[in-house]
Length: 509
Image (cartoon, rainbow, N blue to C red):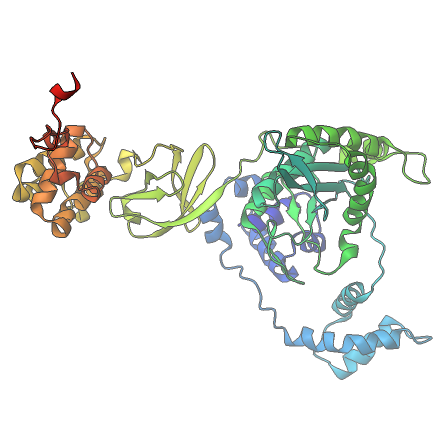
């Protein structure tokens, strides 16, 4: 769905189909099918943006990717090595090559497609190719191979940190920042800081094949990390990974890293830093010197070139910074809630999704729950352990699954064991804002009778009632520590028994 939005956004910006193919990495036929369906429906880009992912799937679901196994194309590609040799002969032209091909394969490609595929082959096999960088087109990002370090002021322990670099293709304006790791969250944070430093966003981001940005590298269609792709969509840009083992694809950022070693690493090598903030403050001073220094053999700096050529070509920054989203796949429990394991907190979903596999996307402030591409619930994040956040409309007390679990039924089962157990079950249910939230706790408490016996469960409920704590974990804790076999009075220190060998209190007067 993110790719579809990118394709339509680039289309409305006036990009050609070929440019869209190059920016998104999606095959040309797939792009054509998406755009044809978009045009046939007379949709506007604003209308598509307002659609949910679920609605987009319904609208464009039929535009599946064409199989990569195309016999006609494979046949043509097999001829290219020999054709490229023939083209080097004196008097040979691409037109004559196509005429030879067409005589041998009458049902093959017409001249325009033949030339297109041939030029793509030449570009892919030519080891030397000069790249013209357009203003506002690409940002190249990578991490330096060598790391810097910070020292713990209390223990003297040295810790290595990563160094991130970003460079604009046209002006070569550079951004550098030290960061804890190369994980996706840190990568997104420093890439976002780079855009804030540049004051705008380029049409594409070109990362090296970092695991935090590219899930699976491929010569033809790499898989972008879903979270990094979501970040790119938030900033209205595309992700085009550099090809593996093709250093010229990222020559700019490779070159700037060598410069960073000289202009930033070297001046800092004899200094000691005790925090990431202190290190980055020193890096920022040297970075400004680097960007304001004249380029070798030229009378202008990176900063001057940026202001003159590229600043006005950058897309504007979004109103809000990107909020990093983590994800989790879970199954909706029988009580209509899903558990966010990191917080041990539970959130409600509509009852019809009970038993379904759903995806949780959560940030520091919000929890969203999706079934396929449909968002079925959204909650403010609550980090209180073993608590429930419930929307009453999600629960259906009259639904048939409640014929198995009801408050009255749990209380009756407790009475069968003992009145004290039933009373404790009532307190557990009363402690929840909605009775259905307590059903799993009640079920767990009653099931303990089969494991430890009814008498121990009765004693455990009595002890927990004295503590004033009403939940399943406290009953388990009491049973595990065998607190149920002792009465509170027996825990006090008993009086010293009489014995001939024991001196009484009078002895010490």
